[in-house]
Amino acid sequence: MTIDDFDTYLRTLGLTVEVIRGNDGSYYTVVCDYELPKGSLRGRRCDIAVQRNEAVPFVVPAAIHTRPPLVPMSMKEPLKTQESGIGPDWQYWSRRYDHRPTPKELWAHILTILCDERWPAN
Image (cartoon, rainbow, N blue to C red; front, side, top):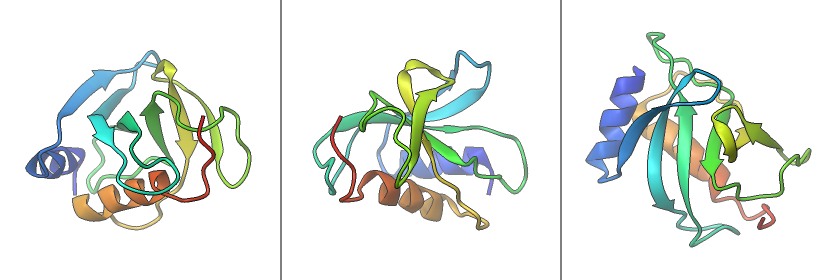
């Protein structure tokens, strides 16, 4: 899988996908205006970003990013959150993915994180 394969998969789901450059100089794939379908954040709309890299196979970064922040900033447990390098209106969620991904599995991983029942609303 490559990052472009992931972008293509997201578009086949009917999602709007953009590539942006963050304040940190890195490039990100962004799913725009996604409504979370379940969990404690159900119904919230946000942009979801994953840092791009050109590794083949794609190496999943240990974070996802959301705009706006969805949970309190600087959480420590059960996950770590902080301001994202993309910009001040983005939130970094620290989560590892240690498997060789397919586009479908990576998207499922992201949704599993964001649709968890444990997150307090921001």
